[in-house]
Image (cartoon, rainbow, N blue to C red):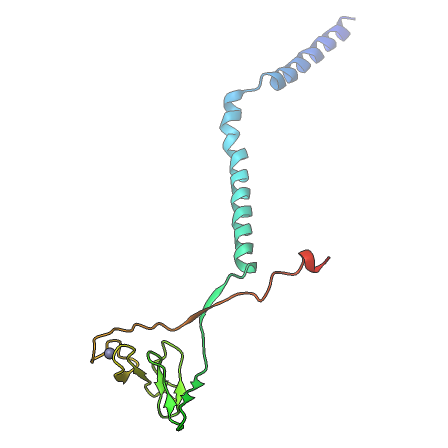
Amino acid sequence: MSEIGAKIVELLTALMTVITAVVTPNWAALIGLLPLFIAPLVVLWFLSTTGAWTLVAITKRGPRLAPRDEAPVPAARAADGTPIYPAGRPYSARRAEVYPAGSVRDRQGLPLSLACPGCGAVRLAEISTCAGCGMEIRQRSVMQLERPSGPPAGGSANA
Ligand SMILES: [Zn+2]
């Protein structure tokens, strides 16, 4: 009987030790382990956001700027057949073609001419200031914003 009682007391003591460890844990040791629980969460968050932004950067295609390559147009002709060049637009007198604003060379690489819109003096298109009247023309090549031709598939297109 006393042997069974001693066993029961021993069992209860062991049980109380386990319950004590669960109910009142060693907080100092747990606080010491806190970085081990937080560090993986921070790493996971960093990897997920970085991965998400990398996916966005790879898959989302934004608008791109590209210099517009406008073809020269033939100059308008007067009644007697002489070409008319609009003032302020570069032109090639050799080929009677008017080039888009900002062009300084023709397709063969030869310099273009430009009539001053202020005084009508003709000069090279690559010279920005008119020698006759001092009017300055700063022309930049025309940039074209390349966009997708329409909205992405879906929405009302599916309906
Ligand atoms: Zn001028």
